Image 1 (cartoon, helix red, strand yellow):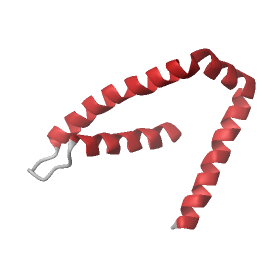
Image 2: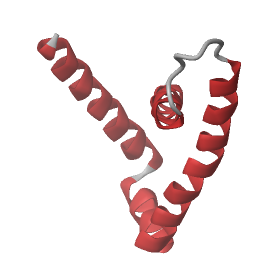
Image 3: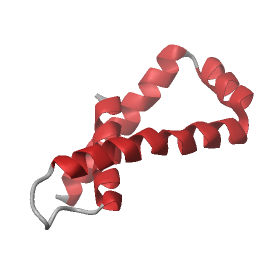
Image 4: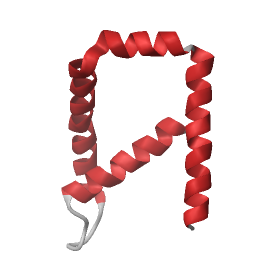
Length: 87
């Protein structure tokens, strides 16, 4: 399992590097520099709001008293969004 994780991690890193190279390293660096740390943090922090609201909606739809908590659903939704963005 560890070998697969390592292999797929390297493949993902290579794919991300290829996309950045195709877009242009300078353009990516300039965009990140223009946004700055505050801008990047603000966008990342804002993303948690719709993610948590969506997680709450899914939590309501799960029947039974033994459903996962909001933090767990938010974590599940975060992982789902990361995989969806990657694909």
